[in-house]
Image (tube, rainbow, N blue to C red; front, side, top):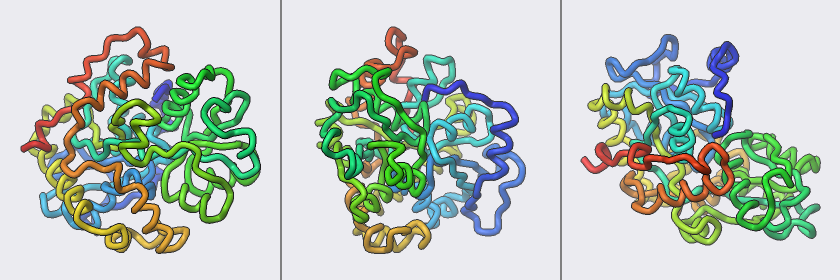
Length: 343
């Protein structure tokens, strides 16, 4: 999440334009939620992305309401913007990648994962059909334009790591911020990128339309281990540590709601999960959306607990290319807590 964290009027303007989805049905997003009376704002790095599916599914299942919480879900196209909203105080939590907590710590911001939703990235490096002959592995990243959701995003992090791991320096290829969904697909079609890192349902649509193919698949723990050398905890609910310490009862309720969702997901089929989600999330059709969920399901935890060796993998990956972390000391124990999910 290498961003300059511009927290001026641009952030406020963006927030006003965001689509809001309120768990209590008739609720309003006006006014800053602060956790009082169970009113919480959570920013998601792309509500329609399957990697962040537990956020909207928890709402759809009514688990926030069951805990007496009134949760407003907001959406940003990339995790880097979501984190900016957290630091600026516009929201109380983010559903995004855990790796941002490490990057923020070395910048003097203490943020922690309170529910670990996934133990694999859920990300896929795809290559366009036109470029498939010259881009056959990460070793071929040199000289290429590669799509990421946003500069400083987790897709940017992982792309840089895969490059460095395979002998390509970060200045030898060009990351291009293309978002996800249709904007990513259009960039691939138009040739403005030769490949890129994205998630389902975008991956499923690219393969279905025969616009490209999967180059590196990190939707499973096995795929994560092969590409990154270990489990890579990704999607999580993370919050400012000071806020967590001051609102433990609220955080406990949030954790309970999310863990109930994870357990529900582990006992239901992809088709059953898809049926609970908003119909407009299935832009490629119901069958393709269900397949996208099925392909991504292995990334999710069943209990919200951080995998024991996950944080060390994330630190190793980030230090391989990120100059901010390379020589910095990271206190991994302060980047996550299992206090709430284990209770």
